[in-house]
Image 1 (cartoon, rainbow, N blue to C red):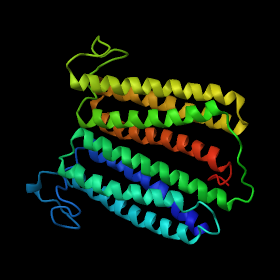
Image 2 (cartoon, one colour):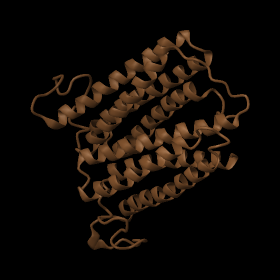
Image 3 (cartoon, one colour):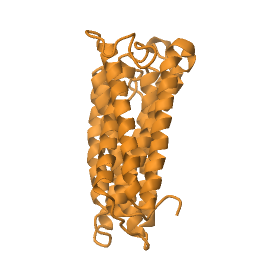
Length: 309
């Protein structure tokens, strides 16, 4: 069972890594640097890059590493699922979420292939990211369920209904904000609305797809922040552990807003930093998913099984 937990830990960490590298692939416009699938220019190891391909070693390397880590992740999730099935009679429910993760992974492979074949059009990239986030969430819950099954001192502490509702709202708000962010990045809409809070003097410019998309992303970011504040407020009547969770989530959300503002002004003041900041923005946003899903799993399966134990 301890080995099962290690597989769950590695699957969760590697999924986060793949999501972040996927963001780098998108930002550095390396998504089509390997135009075929699953090989790259018909090769398993496409290095050194040929000049006729039109891409640098760095761009091809990003996409190649992204695919390699995704393949390794697939084997880890498969092993996790098989091991969890062997333990399902002794530890009730441990096989559910690994199985769900395996199904989501299968869909993710198909979406990755489709995204390449569709030339990385913005909506396909967003769907691909969205499914990756769902995979990440499933593995977070799987890890929590396995860890609590191993923790003899685990206890389930009831949480107020409003607190749980705010957690669910925060998860979905963050989810859709990240999808819109991926579309903003892929459609080159990040710098079309300079300054805050309006977009070139308008709240929602008419007839401008990029500006409208950009502003929708901003609106969802504000909604996410307000829901996080609501979570903090509802935690006042909850267990101290949930209060700590709500405080931590609010700190992460505020950090994401701060990063987003810095990213916005990078277009006009320090364009050299835009790509790195954009990747960091998604990486930090994924931490909100981690914290929120972890909190939901804590409410459902108990306080035990934390990483620090």
